[in-house]
Image 1 (cartoon, rainbow, N blue to C red):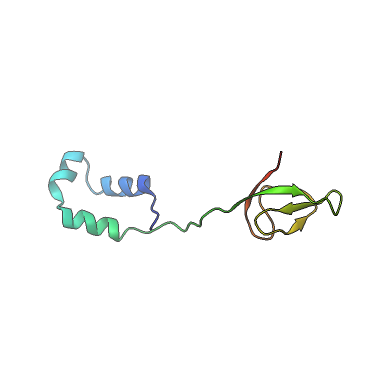
Image 2 (image 1 turned 90 degrees about the vertical axis):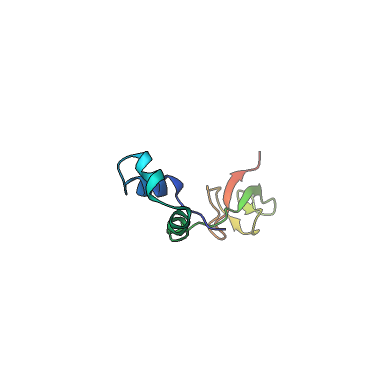
Length: 89
């Protein structure tokens, strides 16, 4: 699967001509398909999620549920594995 910025692609496509009618009349399906295939993709990664769990063995420390690393304070992201975190409530 490829990710693209659809809004930016549409803006770039429309900038080729001034009106939508011109767009519909000027291009055939093969050219449009080529335009989409050649469009740059976004650099994205799947977001890992986890929760901060109280680490009962060490008071005041938290454990990441995604990688089990121990950290001294809950943050938005695990500093070890990069998982997006929330505090277990």
